[in-house]
Length: 387
Ligand code: PLP
Image (spheres, protein in one colour):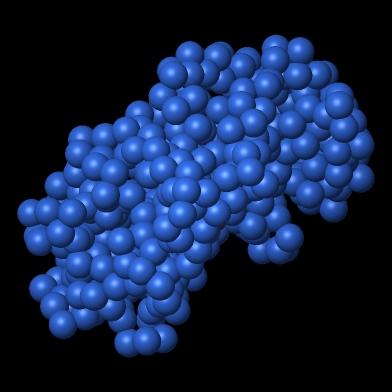
């Protein structure tokens, strides 16, 4: 779809052509298994290690602290389950928030079935974590705090540095799910002070099916996958060399381009926000006004359902989302918006626009042109009417 206006970059991004080009030789030319010892295999091994250095450089980590995974979900599961089991002798309590991605929430729920206790900390109306509640929930059994860097639905950026400081003062490991921030804003593991950090290639113009977990040297963590001696014996399985090479290039491009891109996205996002507020009544903007990802706009349009708007927008060649990609198939209102105090009825009217590299002013103006008449039409038919 050449003329599609794609505004769902928090769900996934197109793979950058420069990334695709770098990956191709590793499918059919330098295809050797990096664990083998002949020349062909060494080409893959070399490329994999060069990519590890690029990922480490973007995060200000050491390359031996980077473990490649199959996706962001795996990195989150690895950090949380691996961290929990490796430190079980010390305690069985984990702290997270109510607005995490399901990759974190469902890993925590599974751990509860294995005898761990989990505290789900609340957030304020902007999606900011309640730090007093966090401090109050720490016990001598707490072994891990896992709080996302930025929320995928509303874009609010959490105070990870402060939270990691609290974790450190109490001798607790700190993990952050940085799937929505790596490649978009500066993410420096030393400045943030985290022990574990997850990322995913397809959220910042790398390929799908590859992610990574930063594991600070000395952090006690168990493996999820047992098998060969891959990834420093931390994650068994023949490495996805083309994907890893692609992830490395995506990191390199992000290093060079993210600052300019962020400025551009913020200007476009603000234009969209202002345009929609001006032309539609009863709109709420979700997320923090300032501490928010530049490309994310999440709004609730009262008296109608997000899904109906999405279908109409799709008809106009505009791809957006109503919450996160993973929950859009369910009829439940977003757990993020309800945790922020938005009523389930209003939360049903949420739309998320997440902007990216290819978007233009013309794309934004097209949304501002087509959405108000869609809202008007739907409100006329809506069972949740104002009156
Ligand atoms: N964490 C966050 C905050 C996300 O937004 C996502 C994807 O939507 C994930 C984790 C899961 O990443 P992946 O799709 O690579 O498994």
